[in-house]
Length: 215
Image 1 (cartoon, one colour):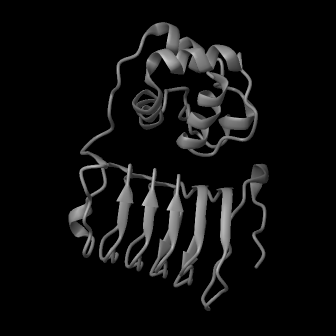
Image 2 (image 1 turned 90 degrees about the vertical axis):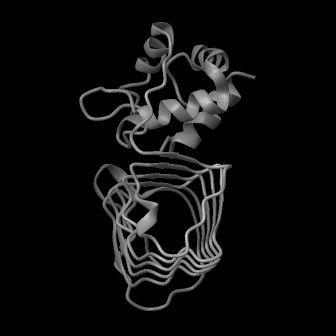
Image 3 (image 1 turned 120 degrees about the horizontal axis):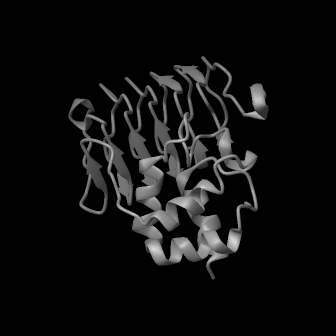
């Protein structure tokens, strides 16, 4: 299976209509990818960003999603039966008539995502559900340190940290504060000194980089 490159060297999914072999997909930014009726059953997705992707009527039965972000992703009518989600983010995701039977969610975040229109979805208390974007309060010092990464090419194109126009990504900031706390966050940002060790495509990948720098 070929995964072609799009603009800015960002990976994009092809359009699939037939059953494909089980895949392990890691560290990919599938911005505005389009897949219809594709079969990703028992596939593994790790550190994948599906920002603006269309993944309708796809088969994700038995798949595993770890640190995957569904940002404005269209997942309508897809089958996630027996899938596992860990540290995933659903923001303005469209999940109408998607089947989540026997799915497991662990430390996931749902923002402006109507889970009532999905089928058989059960979200436990270990996850967070926000009707609107959270607005975490942090010091100006922390915001200044985050701005030092605004134009870093390893994070800029994915919009993980700053949105178009320079506004801080509130979902990412909330995840950083919840997982690290502001003191550790500042310590890690100071250690990074405006640099990043690898390309950042998800909030969790950014969190991992800052956490390692803070040690």
